[in-house]
Length: 208
Ligand code: B12
Image 1 (cartoon, protein in one colour):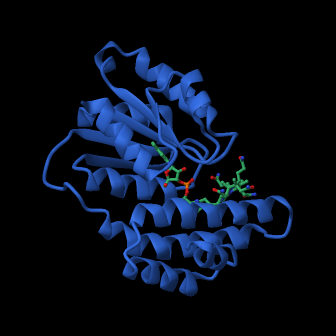
Image 2 (image 1 turned 90 degrees about the horizontal axis):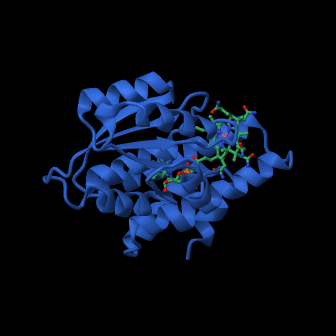
């Protein structure tokens, strides 16, 4: 069912990808599934082609445009529980890392689940995360990293957060392509979200 979208995305075809997303939605396919089984799989192929030297940086940029086109159609549909206030989540991409497409989908999903989200952006230094968590009185801090060289920043932020007695109750959630449950446990995060749907499920668990 998702093979066409995976193909158009991996071929960096923005228009066809957007059309296929619309097509799938018209068929009643769950928007979260489109992200997990279509968009993320398509981007894995793009990543592999980049690694093997078949694609170059401009191709990654085209891939980003195609993802943006798909997520702009999907994000407004991720609405569930918008009027309830489940607490505040500060979300950002760690220092040295500018990938934000997945983060932005996760943000839209948190909002759809009734959380207030404060987006601190990309390439976020440790202090900025800590300041935002304090200022917003956040119950969760969510960090995204797409590079193996930047995922180590997550541990530094967690250490800084845990060393502040005022922030004892703040839970930390991590995600992004190179991150997994094992890494999340190792750095002392409270939860790992493989994709946007899991992110929301875990956020609900952490605040219950
Ligand atoms: C598009 C892309 C780019 C775009 C990003 C545009 C943007 N605005 O984000 C651009 C062109 C800028 C880019 C740049 C680079 N990129 Co790049 N990029 C990608 C690519 C192809 C897709 C990423 C994407 O958007 N995926 C789709 C989204 C929907 O998925 P996602 O991000 O994984 O998010 C989901 C989950 O991970 C999770 N999630 C994400 N964040 C969070 C946070 C929380 C709290 C939770 C719970 C869950 C969660 O939920 C999301 C939604 O379901 C990936 C390949 C891949 N497999 O991911 C490479 C990839 C990440 N890039 C890579 C590289 C090497 C680079 C560059 C270094 C290239 C270069 N030579 O300059 C630069 C680095 C720039 C920097 N300093 O950050 C490598 C990283 C290798 C590694 N292991 O470190 C990858 C893996 C490609 C590869 N296989 O080689 N890139």
